[in-house]
Image (cartoon, rainbow, N blue to C red; front, side):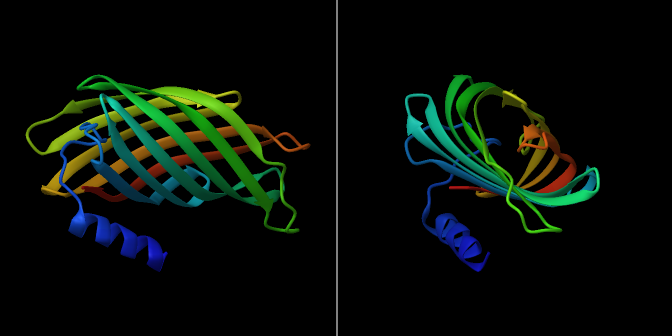
Amino acid sequence: MKKLVLIVILLVMFGQVCYASPLNDFTRGDTSVTLISGIHTFEGSNGIDFTISTGLGNDWATSYRQTDYDTSYHDSAYRVKNRELNILRKITDNLQIYTGYSMTMGCDKLIGQDLKDKGVMQVGIIASKKLGDNTTLYTVLGGGENVTNIEFGLSHQLNAGLEITATYRHFTVEKVGPSQIKENLRGFGLGLTFKI
């Protein structure tokens, strides 16, 4: 975690500034870094979400996202790790589409047994709307086979390179492992978005 904080600080100090959440300027090298912590959940707990998106130029960008959380299914408790790598295409200033790969790994916390990894191709859309000069409302809708991601977010710009971001996310991975486990994360998060 200390290394992650150091990397984020260095990116903020030495990067270029871009504006609007999520990443809307796909100029080569423009980057958005978001760290979200779960503050209230209906399903799942101890959620941490980290996303880094970087412009590639010509309305293309790449995005890496990792989400770690605890969940339960029947009488067992699991620690779940989801990793995504996506390619984004800006259609308009308010609409993006993406495709990529999502890999989910889990471990039974009670007996220490790993679940079989679940990897799927996924697609989705990201829509955003400016609410005044400093606030952006956005939604992410996507998923793949037995994987669903629905997210709503509100980012408020504190200064040129820093935003506070509040989210609601419903992330579901179904039919994991031989026991066909359903791993849910559903709740509110709060964090910071760095634009560089």
